[in-house]
Image 1 (tube, rainbow, N blue to C red):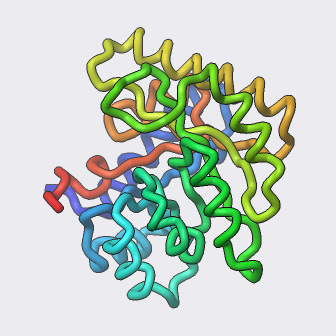
Image 2: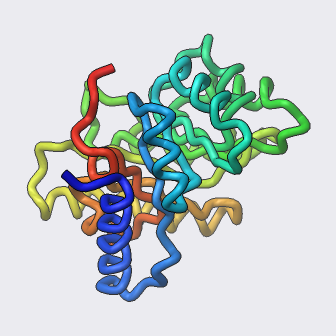
Length: 229
């Protein structure tokens, strides 16, 4: 069994090969370690190997880790579904939120973001395959939501996030990624702050990067099989 350090090296090599194949700068893709259900010690192993960006899905679990690692210069991303009663804690403890999919949540994050922390970076979650079981908005609602969110002063619209249907074959998956990249590039023409396309996970890093991803969210390939919560 590989160590976390070995896994990080392997994933980094995958990212570098994919960016090279796509004729992109190897630094154009951010590795986000998906650390839900993982222990503080496991996160420390990642930190020792140079990782500083961590993505969490479960608020209470994340707050324990944030407190335990408060002395470390880390960037915390909230990537799970957001309930209205959780927005204050998210606004107070995270630097990024990837899973905004309705105006009410964006407004609450904006109102509850402490002024001393600066604007909260957010990505809008798109349900690219219109799956009933997944969060996110359809592409045809994206323009209207971006227009309103862009006026909120305590959050900063940074980009888009998606989780494509896992049942797709490679070509269908790439088509989903390409649709996201097209929407991303169109929004960049309207909003200078948009620079992040959060898509791609352990099994599809290469396809996501080749189709335009700027941030891959990787858990299993770094830590091994997911532990049950």
